[in-house]
Length: 372
Image (cartoon, rainbow, N blue to C red; front, side, top):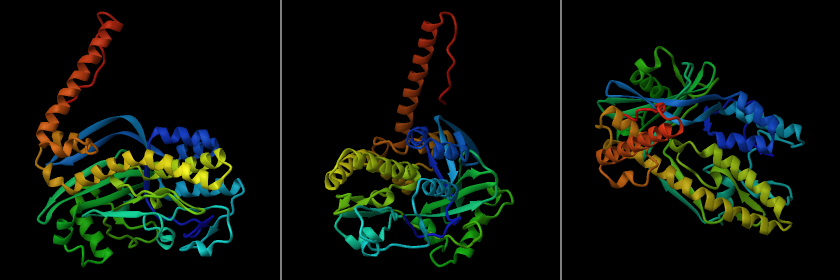
């Protein structure tokens, strides 16, 4: 295995995943799964701070956060225990750099140079117009909190969530118009972080923002590009993770889909004796499975690009639609109409729960949550 970064690199902040992935990790390798789970922070409730009000939103399943360097460390150590040789600090940009191999697995990210070098995967890149920067802070946090700030140059928002004790991710996000109006296109990273820190001064409560642990100015503004590939393999080269399918970060699916790719590839190799058959089956299976999630991620990212459509809603309405951003119906209805429809559905669900409670235990009120 060739890893472009040096061993022990602290690059990156938090990644998130759900209980389904945790179960699959345990099914594949209980030892590393246990260590991963023990290193996570778990939450169900998020909060949204907008128009001077703080609104909580409770989900119905646990979400796990882990510091990316810690996840990489656990997987790297476990791979070596199982006999994998990892060559750290070696970047592969072309298959010609790799010794003769039965199979080459390209997992070099959204801007994969291997994929570009081969150039036969039918790659389509779709840019978005939002801007974001991935930062961190030593401000303690557990459950995510969105902070929407109105500035003279437009709305800008940050999402903070804990990744380990005393360390949190702080993602700052805005439209390209707001980004340009603030002059971030000409500011250095140090200047950008300084201005962001001032904008979110109250929310940071005296804590500093940094680019990376040990390298505070190591960060950059990004504009997301989703990636689709018509083919997931060419010859003996297979794509996995963001290299195969970039999904907007606001959907929180990147880690889950990448790990599931690896599991599916191994299963397909075990199922077929012929490599070509195995890779064809892997690509067909995963492209069909991933496609709906990519569409959800596209809608999630577009919601933030179109945030002006929702920003003047009441705080509870805005929060509800923020968490409904993957909906295929939401973009086609006036926001308040969609909110009313969703509210009616929630009330009906509450009524059904109460009726079930009365049938199961006559005379006893069912426990329910008011969906206001």
